[in-house]
Image (cartoon, rainbow, N blue to C red; front, top):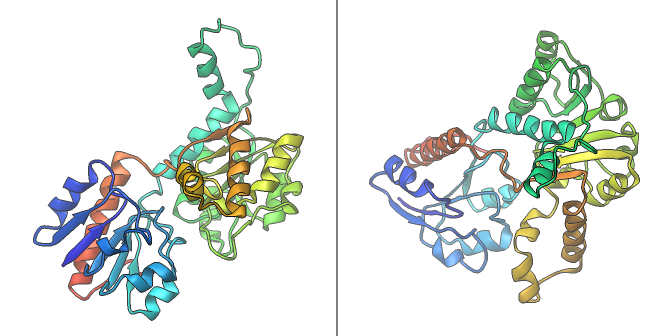
Length: 333
């Protein structure tokens, strides 16, 4: 088969070549976009990552394409229903980030609770051993509200229990056996927000979870609570988040994802070529407000990015492609 890989990172090319001998492989660092769909025309398979927005317009241009495999768990950047209407099969890579994202979640939380990043910054600019402004707080005994108890959420709960935290969770499909095993209880979202010292988001992004945290329910959070998001940026209403950070209602946030991050990544190009929509200006302005706040820790969507996770992503992607070629597609979405 002829396979086009987009958003290929350093190191992935050789791993994919080794995993897919006998196939014609094309590699591109760029995301799949309407400007380069010609690169995939005539290919049987397109493999993408999270920044390729595969909408109706792009799908209409992908003549001859039979299969899309995204090298990620989330697939909100693909119009799956329209792809199906064009007889294009879509698969993802479930489960690879269950450990790595959960660990990173606590990396963000510990940076917030113990001001590690700020302490390091002060030392790097030559500040003496002055602890002023660096007092933190213990996680032990604090209540962690986990929104979404899939693979990642479950691992977050396991780690939290190791720290001696009290856990509450919210999920549309509660796992009561796991709750009994780990000693936590489920609440509805509003109930969780009201009692949590820290809220951590691990739910998939879809129409139902768009702005799941918004200007109305974010006010239910404890004054001085903290918020972590390693899921998808669009789950939080950024405008409401900025307002409540400025007011002090939310003490701090750790964000590996932000609303409109694809636009933020392309900010310079959009400004240069005059392609910016009014909503893009607003979103970028709000994102820059977050970046400039001292009580915000932001990372560039790297919670998934470990050696172990990368190997698992490539392994499962290759298995997806090989199974599709044999008429046995797996990990369908």
